[in-house]
Length: 336
Image (cartoon, rainbow, N blue to C red):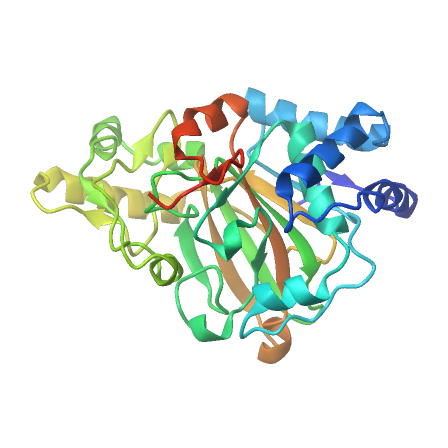
């Protein structure tokens, strides 16, 4: 996928200087951290080029011109620690003492107008998540494994799902080729009949919770019955896992099969996230995957590290989930 914008080295260094001035920890006090990033905007310290780039992304989303964007050569922390994959979250908290990557993602979210959210029972409620190959999930269908991932939207089984996902390449090994695939929901619709679209809009389906979610909350097993197609082109679907609920009409199976066929036929984009790349895309208005195209050193590939955020579409979308906020922190939601 061609980048939307490539920062020059001078632009990257200028933005790094602004971001590195934020001295709050997003892991100790997210609210104070977020306010400090907002202060950069209010004081007019954000370079004009970055404000303009974020405005372009925001406009593309609002007009429907594009659901996925790449920014290249983004600022990162001067030191990127190698994480212990037995417990990468604890290891990051112990080793990572600067937060340039997190500040960049927070600033991007604020300028694009997409409030971040986190889940109270995952990663200590952190708003910045590490997509790494956690050892105990090796070979499993979860984003925190070393496996390929089928097309899906994140947290399919959960009632609260992000509208957008952003992935910042903290470490991407040069000799291994792992791509993130994306299919726009509008392209899926082109291959679905009106009849089957209507069936997919009914609560005839369910999705099992992923292994990582079940480990963090033992009460989670399967979702409630849900529709697969919502709004105009939002999909709630995890390939190979979302299936027809008991008691649903026979045509629900036909519609599910047509969706699987549509997923094969629809146009797709793929992007290899390089170190310093930001890949940001719609989570509900599309589906994404992880494709291991060429792995020359499996151990090296397992050190790939993406810093990830979940975001609501806008403040109104965040406000609709106000009853799910816990801990008094805006945007933090529970698993139920």
